[in-house]
Length: 81
Image (cartoon, rainbow, N blue to C red; front, side, top):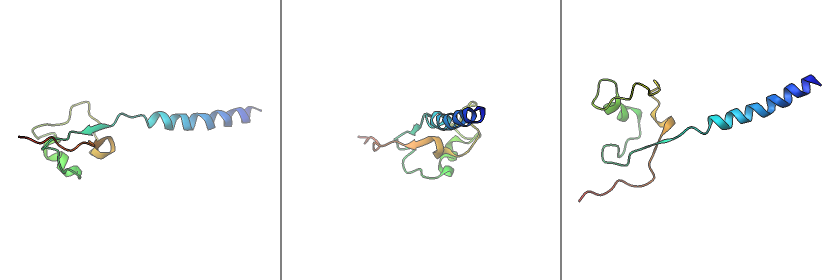
């Protein structure tokens, strides 16, 4: 009986854990002229590398996999005029 309870608990915990991990907040890439057309990580690092003008915050995760968390904004850039 203890084996059944263990497996039932495991079966419930794994999907719950995966669901909780999927709730990460996605930070949109700004839809301005500076970010227009950036589709590769090298484009991000031109400004956001540690030695550039707008480096990542000290609390930013160290991975250079920008598009795992940052997604393109759905609306097109605002026209200047």
